[in-house]
Amino acid sequence: MENAPLAANLSGVRAPSPQRFVHSYLNWIGRRLIRFTNTVHGLGAFALITMGVVITKFHVASSVVHPLIRAQIHRAGVGLLTIVSFIALALGLVIIGQTVSLLSRVGATNYAGIIMVTVVVRELGPLITALLVLARVGTAIVIELGTARALGEVEALEALGIDPIHYLVVPRVIGLAVSIFALTIYLILIALFSGYLFAFLQDVPLRPGDYFSQLAGSLRWEDFVLLALKTFAFGIIIATVTCYHGLARPLRIEEVANATTRAVVESVVVCTLLDAVFIVVYLVM
Image (tube, rainbow, N blue to C red; front, side, top):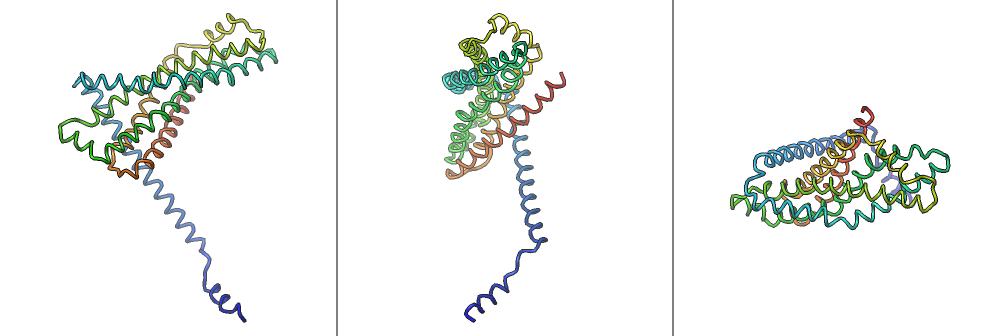
């Protein structure tokens, strides 16, 4: 008898119907699709505006903009040499040294060159470098520009007749593109040399001349062209996405952290999709 009121109350509670669940799920998908469409539209428009400013205003106010480009190259390139060197040594030890050692055990050292070119030169080198630059510099770009936008500094530049895209975005786009290209070459060279060094210390019966001749024989001129295109594209994507989330929309100070998270996630997704496109190109060649 004591449980009668509780049973009566529970009997009045209805379980959600399947139609209501499906309706809620479709609403959630619809909101996600609308947000995705708006993001793609905004990023595309921002990228086109940035490319237009790069082409039409590259030599405008060069005494101001060009030093900013060099500063970004120093920040995203020279400033990351230490961490890139460490990652390259680790990559050489984990990937190249161990792979060459395993190939020697099964008598397949003749495939060392093609494996190194495929894994390190085409894939891991550019992608790891881009992610390092995104983590160290891309996040800082969102915070800097987002804070500047929240404090009204961007509007102050516009009031002075200064184009924010030309002054704030173009140096970062060019600087990150050049930096990722240079850092990728640096990382690949250190990884290839240190990988063979680690394999040599393990007494792998592969002479240096054979190792480097295999690398040279596995490389084609298309690899150099596609490597340059991929690394420059990674730099442009990271700079464009991070600048977009920090600059293109009005922000409050408390929204900068969420904007940084969105920029990192979208940069990783777009770079991964672009890398998949290059994989298809490599397979077709």
